[in-house]
Amino acid sequence: MKAFVASVGEIFLNSISNSIWKNEKSLKIPLYQREYEWDITNVDDLVFDILNRDKFLGTIILDEKEDCYEVADGQQRLTTILLSWISIYNHYKDAP
Image (cartoon, rainbow, N blue to C red):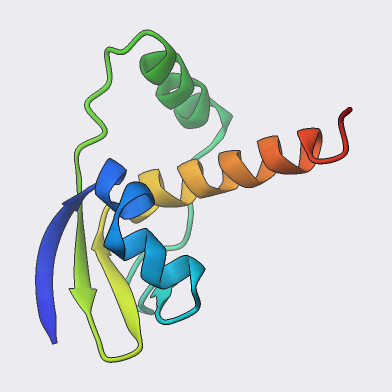
């Protein structure tokens, strides 16, 4: 077990994401984390900040296990970003 800090970009753009997308490891939210609680206002604020480049997305603390990365901190932001990407993908996947 090894805990480490990763930026949001590192999670999506380097070896962490490669091991997740290749199904070598999964990304898990441990049971001790609170449930996803962000509402539309939080999401709107995050999107607005990203579009205006005002938001530092901060770091995500991951705990590397043998078969997964557990999210120790940053779960709300990470979940929001992943849900947004999935929504955008689903919207445009069949577009010409």
